[in-house]
Image (cartoon, rainbow, N blue to C red; front, side):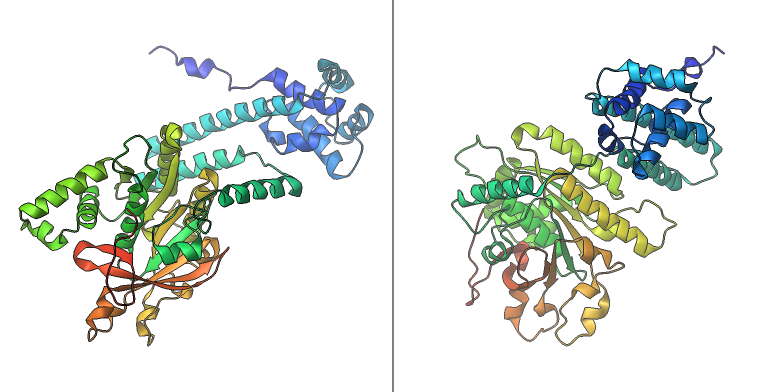
Length: 466
């Protein structure tokens, strides 16, 4: 068997970049604080560079001045002077760069090489554990995901800005809002008038939780929101790109979702569609609805088992794919408690807490709204009004903590069978809104079409939006 050429390779590193970082700090000590946001001592490949950088960091933490003499003395006290090559090597580092201006650039090279080395190390561990077969396949995949995510988090660079910059950005955003025709909606409109008035639309970087008991209509409500957004175009003008939306369905198949959307858009009775008892008028309406829906850029991922790492990777890929059309505009996940945890051995409450944090991070990273559907426990059924509350969110209070907006859905007709009018009402309870008011709104529920429309007091449903 020929020798594996990979065994003869040195791990990725860049000696000159490492020397450039330390030499730059010695030339300009003020650059150390910038470099420390990018790399740590263990990011250096060479041991003597690690020791020198750690000594510089220790001196900085002790508020000591940074120069060759003080660094030399610290290394001597640590009994590391001979390990790093003596005073001659320190002098050589000083003379290796003329200025500290490029220290940040060199630090990013060092960080990238360290990340690749960590990937190689993690890959070897994954291979070893896979061949060992001491763990189940699911446990191996979860462990591999954690390793990769830890490497990605370690490579993130912090960014600090002054308040004056944030104020300027706030004014620019306000100016863009004032320029709109509808001044009350600064985010993505849902085309439900009362809901948009209370929330000003779906806001970028916000995590929106839509929670309810089973069979209340979480998926139907989410699909109606999506339909309103992706169908927001002029049928006579094919040129403007429609908003790109990702729907991650962990419960229903894409065929079921497509069927629901067809019924909702065409206003054809969903029971007749399921049983195949449709007439010629129904077929014509469904065909027209299908032509309209084909114009949308709604992506459906109906893989039954997805982790947050996989969901995040899909969203980032679509963001790049849709870059020319304005990028991905919205992510909807049905539903939160079905997302695979990173570590199955963790307590369930901690698993859900990690998932909700990742959802919020995804919204901030992509700068788009992320909607996650969630289940609530049975406590609401024992109350007199049967309305869900924030405390009813199942399995973790961190969902409430991480969410920017929490909408609780309630169908009074499920509990009061004596009043048929109540069966056509969906109450949307905005129980939390970090940057806006809370309260309740009503929508008209057209059960036969699985469609929600703006509510009128006389219960005469009207079409609104697309």
